[in-house]
Length: 84
Image (cartoon, rainbow, N blue to C red):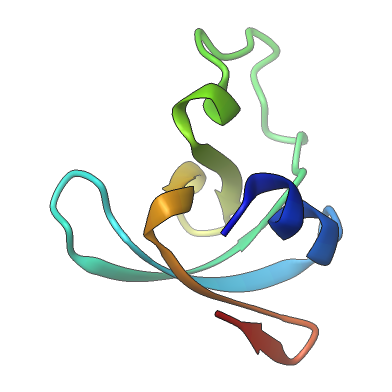
C-alpha cells in the first residue's frame, strides 16, 4: 500500500485497525491505532524521517507511538470497511 494512498483514505485522529507483518520477526500483528496524533510527543522530534524508511508513524493507545512498515501492511480497516 502506498503511503499517500493510505493517508488519503484515513483521516488524522480516527481509529483504524491495521494487519501487518513486522520487519524484525516477520510475525503477523494486528494493531488498533490512530494517525496524526501529536499530543504525547516530547517536542524533540525524530532523528530520521519515517517516510524515507517506508514507515508509517501511528499512536497505539496501550503502547504509545509505533512505526508500521508500509510493505508489510496486509489490510487497513477504517470507517467500517476493510482495504487490502
